[in-house]
Length: 408
Image (cartoon, rainbow, N blue to C red; front, side):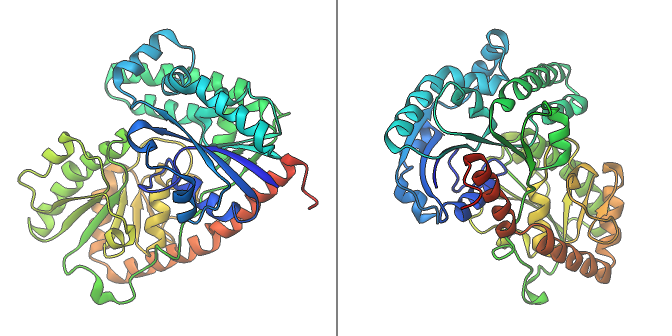
C-alpha cells in the first residue's frame, strides 16, 4: 500500500504535538510505501528532508515542505475578527492553504497513493478540496474540548472570552470537516464523545503509547539524587504547562521549603521555551531548576523522587504522565492529569485536588516503600496498556480498512 502523509515535523524537539506522530510513523512506514508533505515554520523548514526523516527511522520515497511564518498574536487577533475558523487554523489556511492543496494534488497525481493520511486536525479543512484516494484523519484530542476546559479555568476575562470563541469555532469545525474523512482517529472516548460527530462517521479510538525502552527506571538506587527531586516536564511556552510550573514554584515549592528547608530538595522543571515570567521564578529560589530542553528525557526524569502533574484543563491523554510512569516514578496529580488512563489512585498513582498536592507529596517523600510500590505498579501498567507496537497494529488496521485493503 502507498500512503501520502500530511504532517507536522515528526522529529525532535519532541512535544505533545508531534511525539505520537513520530512513534506511529516509525512503526507504520516500514510496512507501507510512504511519501510526505511536511508543514513547518520557516525557521525549521529548510532543514527538513526525506533523508532526515529516514535517519529518524521513518523510511520514505520523498518529501515536500510547505513553510509558513511564525504565528504571532496580531495574526491570531486578525483571525478572531475576520475568519470563521479556529484562529490558528484560520491563520494557516490564509498563509499556506492554497500551497498545501497544490502540493498535495501534484503528489497525488504523480505518485498515485492508495491513501491520504492527515496527521493534524488543523490541516483537515485545507485537504478537503483535494481529490484523490480515501482519507484518514488523526484528530488526536478534541479541539473543542481543550478550548472548553481552557475557558472554564481561565481567570482573565479576555482569555476566557477568547477560549469561548475558540470552543464554538472548533465545535463547528469538527462537526462539518471531520465527517468528510473516511476514518477519524481520536485518542480517548471522552474526546470522541465531545466532538459528537454524526453516527455515519467512522470513528476509532487509539490511545497514546509511551516508549518504555528509552524511558525506564534507573538500574540502581544509587543513581538517584541524594536529596528529594520533584519533577515536571513539557514545552514551557504552552500556557497550561507554564501555569503548572507557576503553581509548583509558588505553592508546592514554598510548602516544601517550610518542611525540608531551602537546600533540602529540588524542583526540577524539564523543558524548553521558558518565558521571562518562569525564569523570574528562579530568583531567590535555589531549589528551583529550569533545565531547558534535554535530548534524553530519561536523564531528566528517572532520577527524580516524585513526579507532580497539577493539570487543570485539557483534552486527550497526558503524555507527560505516561513518560513519568514509564520511568517508574510515583505520580501525584489531579483527576485531569490521568484523563483517559484506566488507573487506580493508591495503586498506580495518587489522584487528588490541586489544593491537596503539597501534603500528598510530603507524605510520599516520607514513605519510601509506598513510593517504590506506586512506581513499580505505574511501570507495569504502561508496559501492559501503552505499548506503541500494539497500538501501531491497531492503526495499521484503520489504514487498511480505509483504503479497502483490509484483506491483504
